[in-house]
Image (cartoon, rainbow, N blue to C red):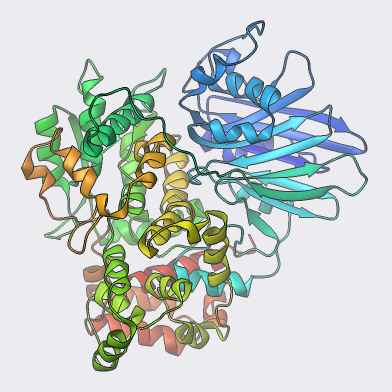
Amino acid sequence: MCGILGSVNITFKQQLLDQIKHRGPDDWGIENFTIENHTVTLGQRRLSILDLSPAGHQPMISNCGNYAIIFNGEIYNHQDLRNTLNKDLIFKGHSDTESILYYLIENGIRGVKEFNGIFAIAFLDLKKGLLFLARDPFGVKPLYYYEKDEKFIFSSEIRPVKSQIEFKELDKDALSCLLRLRYNPSPQTLYKNLKKIHPGHFIEINLNLEDISISEASYLEKKSPELPNTKQSNEVLIYGDFFQKAVKRQLLSDVPVGILLSGGIDSAMVAAVAQKHSDIPLKAFTIGFEGDHYEDEINDAFRTAEILGLEHHVKRIGFDDFLSKFKECARIVEEPLATTSIIPMYYLSELASKHVKVVLTGQGADEPLGGYPKYKTELLLHNIPGIIQKVIKSILSGYHFKNEKIYRGVNAIGITNELQRFLKIYEVFSNSEIKELIGHQDTTSIDRIKYFYEILECSNKKHSVERMMAIDTRMNLADDLLNYTDKITMNFALECRVPILDLELVNYVEQLPYQSKLNFSNGKLIHKAFAKKLLPDEIINRKKKDFSSPTSYWFKSESDSIKNILLDNKTLFGKVFNQKKVAEIIMQHEKGYPREKQIFLLLGVYYFLENFNS
């Protein structure tokens, strides 16, 4: 796990590379290459997890000198890939970097489709004059790039790019999309011409001509899983086999591994399997909140740790802690989000980094396994005839619901266009609100959803809920939850792994009919059925709390603090946003309507704009 930085016709030295030193404090390297009239520079900051010796140093150049690679991530099946290579190859060490370098040399860039792991890769083919960048299938690792006037620069984070490129213009289309969806989906960012590679895609930079050319392509493909050698045909047992192999695979490390433990079932399942493969109690880490808050999970997590025999470490934070780190978290994450768990993740990562270099998390279960209420909403709407939906819509349209999930579901009633219905279920701000806030409506969100709808061949899926889950697994996860998790954990030189997004496990899950995953009342059916073989009922039957903050309460009780920040018309935020509408949103929350996500997103945009030109 590391940070990568590279360029074409923009030379840089260690000072620029050290802007991502937090991602890899153990080692660094920079190499320059010349192809035609272009200078290619590859740099990497290393967090040593596999092969701690100098044999894992990057940039790594092949024995023949014709290929080079820089790599951020972990490839859990790299030894299996290595075993397929030319038997005459002599390896210098046992790092996954060396395995994938030679795998790409033998199989080409599309060989990344066989990588079971998390990664952002730059692979340079000096013989053909091609530079490739690739991002893992679920977008666990971010990868940004900028290209203009024969100059090209890419990085794990935006910060080094901003040091080389002056961004003067805020992308209003991207801002309106952000306000609609709660995050900016690939490839757009709030900076004009700064892009991020789609999950499951690679870009090719052709350096053979005076004018460099760039093209992007997907390597995602529908792949039937290889079922385990078992006489059992029971789906739950097969799921359990894939799940356990995924966790065991992701324990691959030459340094200790810990667990980010919530009070819920997902991280508990990961912890239960991981502990089975450890000779000592694994370290587990939980964040909680001062005061009596429903969102606090410390007691539940403590009980889980006690049952599983984990060494448990906890920390509690209050509103002052929350607000004091908002600006810092906005700087770290670099892209505003409406996800209130960003701040707790900061303190959780800080806590874990004092004890371990690698952590496993339970993230990634809800999207492929149907864990969110929106999937039950879609399931329900799919089964209600359109004429009845119109009657229901006419009855309910006059009500102002104080439950956000019900409000979104009601808004989606009667929309027959599938993508428009998905968008209505997703949206944080409505298009009319966005127009009031910034004078610019969202026109790009639907295109972003449509892109993955087509890439994933969703029209071939039997049910709309399967299509929604497939899109969310590659889109919402990548540029929202996984984005902030990567940025914040890596800020503390902490590698975060997501076993539930193991490639083989997800391949199997997506082959199952939706009935194995959810019904009108429950989600993650097969997941919870297997949990019974790992955990007692008291953990399995706990009410889902999500990993969130008590922002609903805080933004009411401390609304004056929020107003002091957002309602200052002398700031750039005050110039971009309609202050009257912002004040109305805060007031709505004070009156009991759930607007904490909207307020959190506005705070994120405020701090983003504070640093826009710096």
